[in-house]
Image (cartoon, rainbow, N blue to C red; front, side):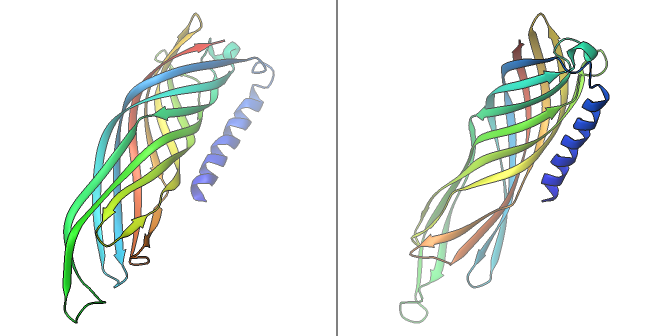
Length: 234
């Protein structure tokens, strides 16, 4: 809820700024483009068993990413060609995964008292289909420095092979984006370089299947991305 309020506040601030430039900002342009770069994903999580015991882990992964985006640019007559406020949507391609394999031993409650069994627990989490809605400021100074804020969403898919017979489902998670970069436009072309950070909501997954209810996993991912984009403005 707090993150949604931050995004709403950013949108409200943009609205007030646009009102200040009401007449000169009436003209707007439409742009499309693509970007490429890399992302670093970190996730920390806690595994809670039905006995009440917990285990905490942290993992990280790097991945190349690419995206396609569309944007509306407002205020060229004030800030220069392709250099006004931008509101857009961006779809990323590529994925990051984190896996873990371990040998575990547990007491078999349906066997003789004290009997134990062991096996291999394999789990893999895939983060994919990242998309966001963003707002950018005009590019300030001769370098074209801009700030960015937005709302993000991605899919979280679990792939596991647990000897206990349990499984975990998939989820969709939301997050808030902040970033900065440099943008320049000329002759209908625009180049952007950007660094961004996305803070994701907590993910909570319950064990299902033959070992249903035995384990609950919660995780909090976050990621940093650096990209270079080339676009066209109409």
